[in-house]
Amino acid sequence: MLSSISCYAVILEYMANIKFVVRVKQRGTRAPAYVQRIDRTPIQMTTNRKLALMMGKFTAEDAAKSLQNSQCIPELLPVQVTA
Image (cartoon, rainbow, N blue to C red):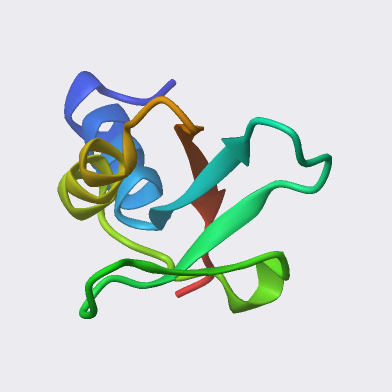
């Protein structure tokens, strides 16, 4: 049986391997778009999920907030990455 400290360490290690991508559903289009780059204005998008930018939670939340308008609905998708 694992102690509570070792369980906490396992959870932290698992969470360290979680990144986020921002998927954007635009009204009138079927294919979702993903954030590819955030260093330009406007944010660069792609329909290829493999090209999506993997971000930390706070960066992904900031990108989603900047994309919120009447034309698109952003959502954060967690992605587990291997170390």
